Image (cartoon, rainbow, N blue to C red; front, side, top):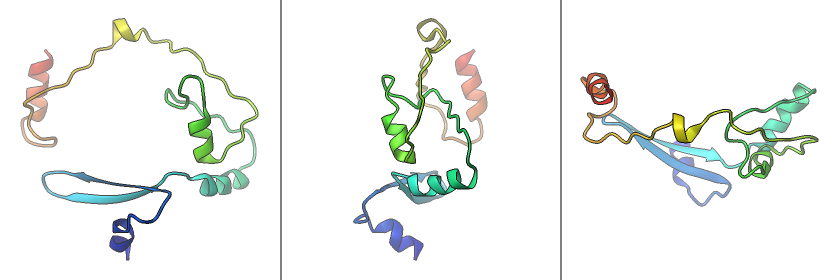
Length: 114
């Protein structure tokens, strides 16, 4: 059954995780590599594939991304970010807010940010 599979943490190659809310919890099992399934998609739709994201590379190295998808890229490159993070970004870690989806959360968050 599904519950037995997600509770059997001896199966390698998967990440086991959970999330909770005040009303429920969910157990998840996620494959660390989707290379086999992704290869099926590439075979179904041959051609050029372009991947874009701010998080595909670590220090201009795409190995983490390409290995999980089973890709052998013929060309890859990284462009610098157009954003001036030191001057245009702030990290806000709010404290004492109501639980997500609870009444009053949006109003309290707006008051805190204005």
